[in-house]
Amino acid sequence: MSLPLSEDKPYRQASNSCKRLYEEMIACYQKSPCMQSGEFTFEQCRHSEDPRQVTAHCITLRKAYGQCRRNLLNPQLRMRGNMVGS
Image (tube, rainbow, N blue to C red; front, side):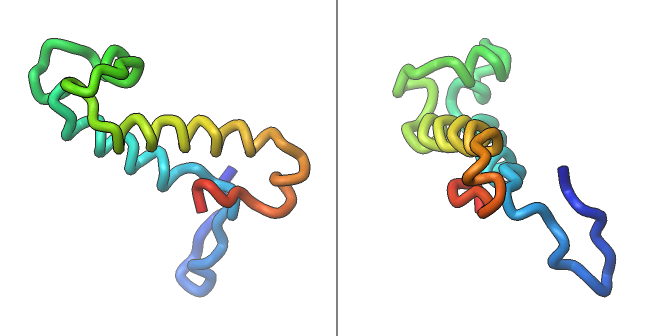
């Protein structure tokens, strides 16, 4: 859903993109004890809510990313842009 970027117009990007939030969430989970141990897959870690395995920050990012994705389907927010992922 992103617009093509060019050097003369670097600002052309969809305002309601959740990409930055997604990248922060992925980085957080990669640094979590769950992924560092090597015992679990990313999907298992992402669904875990065990505070010994996944930090509260990662869980918050996951929930914010989910809300951002839901807001993409909301017609009122789709026109104004997403405030969660911006």
